[in-house]
Length: 147
Image 1 (cartoon, rainbow, N blue to C red):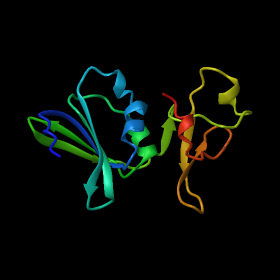
Image 2: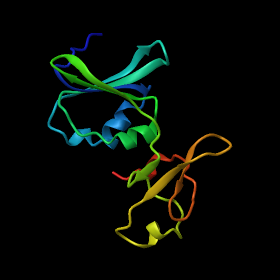
Image 3: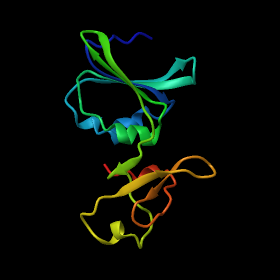
Image 4: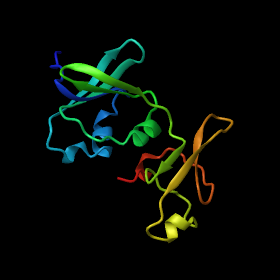
């Protein structure tokens, strides 16, 4: 399969195979006027299979959401058909208004207008996020993403 190269835009690469449509919705790309190509199950030497999203415009993409979802994702910014910048994501130290706390007694569940803040913490099973108010651990459930 052949997909044309971009003259100007963004390529979101190394997405876990089968996740591109979900990311498309999380990033609100369905509301954009620009052309977006989703490539599913592309061959990858590193992962076996991967998804790719190509955006035919320079948009402000929330890298914190992508770093939280999958730090293996890479972002390439293209101008005049050439990569002008490539970013490798890392889990952000702090997430602000990306996910919701699942604790019903947390102040973010009771009071409106309070930022949902999570901080990266070390744990026996690797890094994870904890609510900045009540210390509730995030389980990574995608239904708590704030859109």
